[in-house]
Length: 597
Image (cartoon, rainbow, N blue to C red; front, top):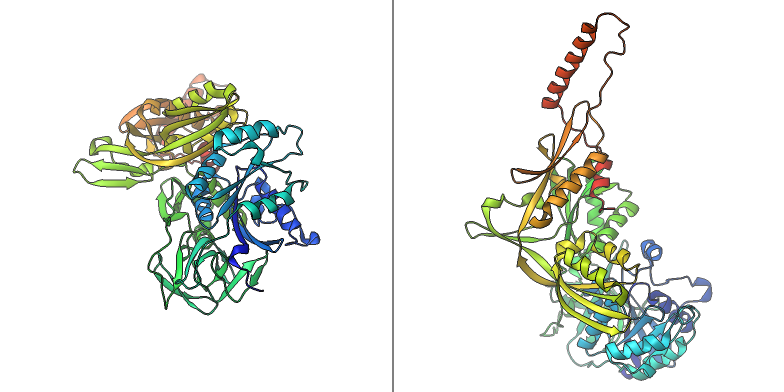
């Protein structure tokens, strides 16, 4: 493969909201540039996981090298969901330009806006595109004006395409070559390369996607991973066309892949800087950070015999996805399991689904929780992500919870219901701006704990699916928070403990007790279900006992015989209540811990 002059290289990412046609556009680009033969072509070609195809979302970003009119276009297909915002930011650092895809029937959404601002911060050239012009509901003139008003791009510069039919895609390729500047970089400088994604291959180890900024990278060279502080030898260097194709070297501005015999994805994280071990660069490339879990939950195998298999499965999955954490924990109700940390709710759902599909596990997940900072009476500080670890209310001075800045784009018809939803979740309005007469942006500061449960579902149902959400973490604030425990027959079940604001604790306790009463199977004795804050009971429901007909065998005779049997049964029930244990079937946890229907 001949080396391409740096002036003929274009590095671009596609950014868009979920379901605005990003993967379909990538398919058309592959097809038009001849990167994939027609007989091998399939929908969502770059989405390699079944889960991605089923849900219509991109989870793992992919890169591919395309050739068009004597130029090389390195295309990076990025995830569209807010949970993977850090991966998107690393992809943008590897590029000089972005193709901003907006649905011509829906207009700009919150995630599009967030990623556009990210591209502007990185000083990237933006090529705006209105997609889905083949839809009857498409209104390109209106949304081109909206893009001009919101992002400041002249409406006449917005390209109009249909990724599905291929209309206008060739013009887009020409526009990329004209508008996006070539990369800068020097071959004589010490090697600096950025890892913007990594995945685990069972046979080759970790395969990292890299962008060379300065210098030249060659196979057989000793490479230093600057943040991880490790040295590895480059076994293979290549380009994705879209199949992995080995090359002799990668120079400044080029994008490709690196295989260096690494066995753990955490040693080659997104944002890592690679340099030569012999003549190292002095500075790392900016922007690297460790992935921080935001949402936590306990995962337990339904069958206790699956525990070891579950542990191995988590280890294997972490080889491919280094952004989630897990540590062993024990629950009196659920047995042995793991406390897992995730980037967000979608990430949690995907990890659970992959564990169940790829490793054939049946799992129970406890309610999602977040990290709290607790200051004890003696001045010590502790961080907890499991509600059952919160000390008693008299043992700490204050508890702080994480907050975030939530940005929503909603049709103006739903403004009232959206404001009501945010205020019911303890949100404080920071900004309200009309993007057009029909749509506005609402920005609220609200506790993360109020968002992780079912906020997104409520947002979609109250806006009939039209509202979109983007959020970013914004520090901690003290709150009047309490732990609500659920007791069965006087015994606390730790899996149901949760931390809520004092104002909503009574309603939460009452709802949970009612739900459990409907689900818990009846026993031979009465079972009280109580919600408690510390030693104070705030709600109670009772599961009535079965009444076995002990007089069924009687056939007449004196009434005292009947009374004697009933008295004996009553005493037996009293005794059973004092020594009996409530057996809670596993599916009860699944039903109760599932978010409110």
